View 1 (cartoon, rainbow, N blue to C red):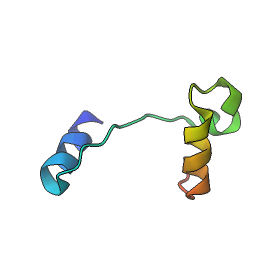
View 2 (view 1 turned 180 degrees about the vertical axis):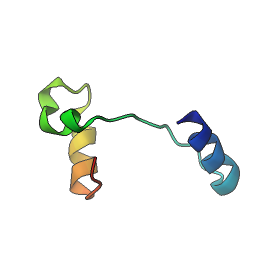
View 3 (view 1 turned 90 degrees about the vertical axis):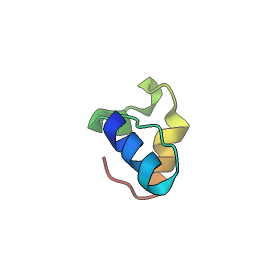
Length: 48
C-alpha cells in the first residue's frame, strides 16, 4: 500500500494514508477503532 501512496503523491501531489479494511470491519463497527470512519466510507458508497 505504501507504493500506492507514493504514486499518488508523485502524480497528484497529494499525500494519502492507506488503511487496510476487512469485510468484517463493516459488520462489526463496535470492534473497530474508528467506527465513524467506517460509517462515512459506507455512506459514500465505497464497497469493501
